[in-house]
Length: 365
Ligand code: TRH
Image 1: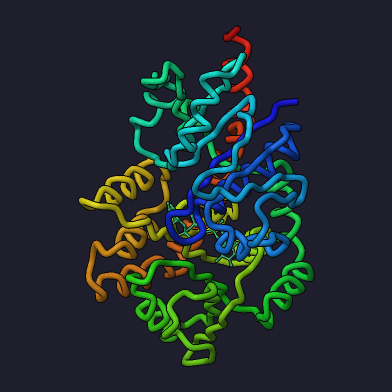
Image 2: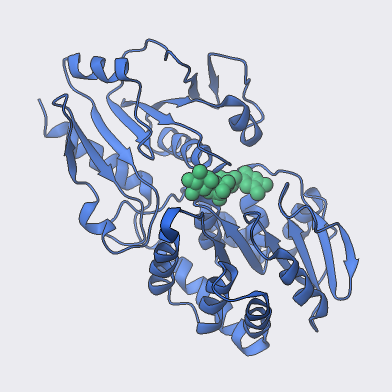
């Protein structure tokens, strides 16, 4: 059995721990790895995983060992595989112990997801360290040449079952506090600078009635209630599987960051991505790299660009109306399914990571 340490430093929000918790569970469940997850902020983690005790230094949750990554760090022997998420640098004393190990661990830096073409050239490259250890880049991505996307076994089948069953859909919506209706369901998870009020205005004036399900803590100025053709519902913070189900139930998903962005692609429904803002507007290149790869109809691509601030509020309203117009909408819907199927035909990230680590371990003494 492979023992792995996965290091997660929570920079902000839920994406860092969201990705790591998902990956830890999948490596254990599908590849039989014994996972130890190091997390520096257990309070944030506990929002995502209510079974977690934020006061415990070490604990087992759902078969995963969770270690509170304090300063100084707990003095633990390195595992066979060491994964640092998003270049978070394992503790120096731990790295010294890696150096001294009889059989040096396979060391992976799990990078941020990007659709940029250079990813394929850098994925799996070695990065020799001053210590003599070698760290390997692992780049999640959309191509066969990248590290792939996190997708649990059985995920798309579970999605298909829910999308094919109106009763199951209605039951799940009720559980989240939304009384199901025969209208357009839009979910909203975005950063504070999104023009969410424009979205609400356009939906309120649209011919077709909509429900806008707003994620916990997002756009607090959008109060629950009805106006025009729009009903606004405020959601509690859902479990990760629960949030997946919500995305599957919806007609259109507004998502953000990294993990919800990937999950919306598995929902196989039209989606709008609010990308995490970076210095020097580096995120705009990333956004366009994804739009160039993901061949959505023009109206969908233009809406994504407008949602990320490339047009003013009027431009956004106009693009929203264009994307929701019946012919454009049907086209976008068909496309979203085809794009999701195309991605799902590739090996998932966990399978690629397991294979990569196997090769690394077999090639060293
Ligand atoms: O929360 P995010 O914005 O996370 C991040 C961080 O900002 C991080 O620093 C940055 O590096 C990264 O994005 C790119 O968005 P993200 O990535 O979508 O993560 C949200 C997680 O929260 C995801 O795992 C889904 C989960 N979630 C729930 O479990 N329940 C909910 O109700 C919602 C709305 C989300």
